[in-house]
Image 1 (cartoon, one colour):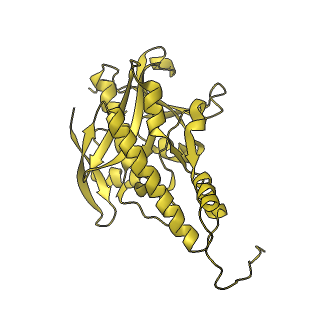
Image 2: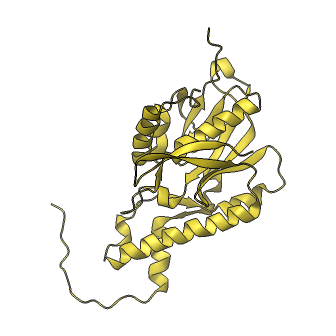
Image 3: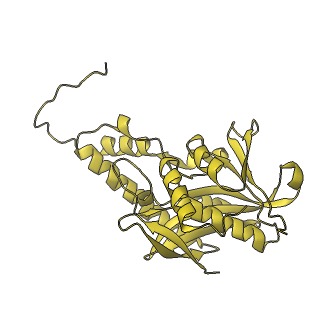
Length: 199
Length: 63
């Protein structure tokens, strides 16, 4: 599936269209992982050359997508998706289609669970870096929601948020904060409500 | 959820929020796969030759 959606180019503040890539192959994931990690290394070297110590670095984590792809290879009910713009992957996520809802009105109903999600490092406020494209997270969640509808899950969506991301998910329309999940390292669980018929 | 029909204004507002709150999602069960920037920085520091000091600048202590 390839569809056209939008991000904001930071340098011009203009909306630009992107491609959505479903069912990412292992080779694409590995190549993207290498590019992302190399970018972060370059950024760190640049900061170190200015005399700053690692103490000033944020704790943003880079997930080794290639390892994840290998561990999920051959398993059904999962899918890696990405958004691409200007020949580069601008963000990736891993969706799990085997989970069920927790909100009372959609308890036990299937949903799309966002297992991992990350924007490319050049799209994050890392160190002194200004993002190239803005809105990657919102776009990926929008795609996950579309996937939920495509599967007949009516837009139901679930995820555990890192503490630094909670402010973002609380502001997403239709997302409900179900609080800290003691079964999941105390991370806050968010669930997107299913669509209701509008009269 | 209602993300499919956001206006451009709403998209820009959410981008502002996302700038300050990266939308990263992870599964902590597989936390060992993660590499933090600090880890990377420390690895790089350990493997490269440190540049010669050209000038010393006394560190400042926070008040």
